[in-house]
Amino acid sequence: MDAKSEIEEKLKQIVAGVLNLPLGSVNDNLSRESNPTWDSFNNLMLFSTIEKEMGLSFNLEELEQIINFKDLCKIVYYKKNETPQSS
Image 1: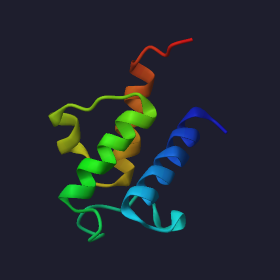
Image 2: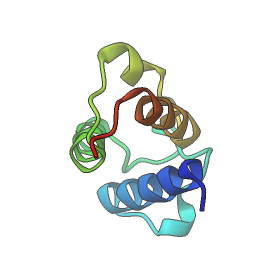
Image 3: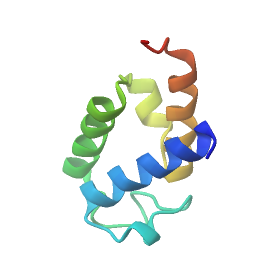
Image 4: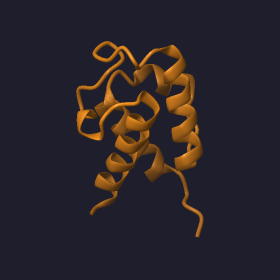
């Protein structure tokens, strides 16, 4: 599995867990507008969990760019490749 696929799978697990969704329902089109469980509270929980589990930090501009799961994957993949990884 390549790095991009690994990140996507990890994010699917996190999103499914935080939003209490079946893993198979997490896809590129999943968004706050399409899913009522992705409310403001769960949005905070989602990003807090991603930051903790993936060792990342988001700024406000990045958070505003994330409209759906596809956007989330793109930004996390970019950040993981921009952040020096500890050995």
